Image (tube, rainbow, N blue to C red; front, side):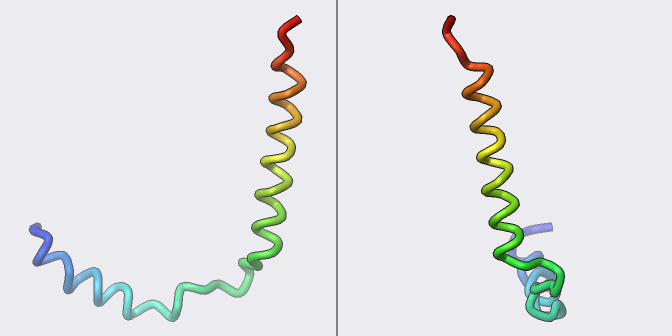
Length: 52
C-alpha cells in the first residue's frame, strides 16, 4: 500500500472518531501520576547510585 492509497483510509478513520477525548482520562490526574512515578524513579536511582 503506497502513501497515496493510505491517506484516504487514515482520513476516514480520523474523522470517524469523536474527538479522541475519553471522559475517564483526566489530564491533571494523568500528569500527577506521571510526575509521581518520575519522582519515585528519581528517588530509587539516587539511592542506588552511590559511588561508595
